[in-house]
Length: 97
Image (cartoon, rainbow, N blue to C red; front, side, top):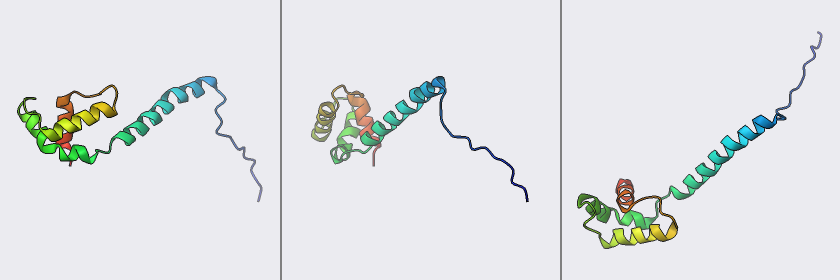
């Protein structure tokens, strides 16, 4: 039985272009997915505001119940630059279980 010579190839990335490509595609994806995972859990405060959020949506923003107002203020204080309008926040709260 003869041994056939095999060559081990290391999975190193010595090409600077490939390294830069990996940094510009993989690192942002990891950062975004981590941030999404951290903010994807809905606080109990938002869950208790569901009825008020539905009233806010149904009245086209005219009815602002106390629970929804509290959830909206919490959202505004927790996230310095809000990502959603009040209507969008109400829709997210209404869609949660």
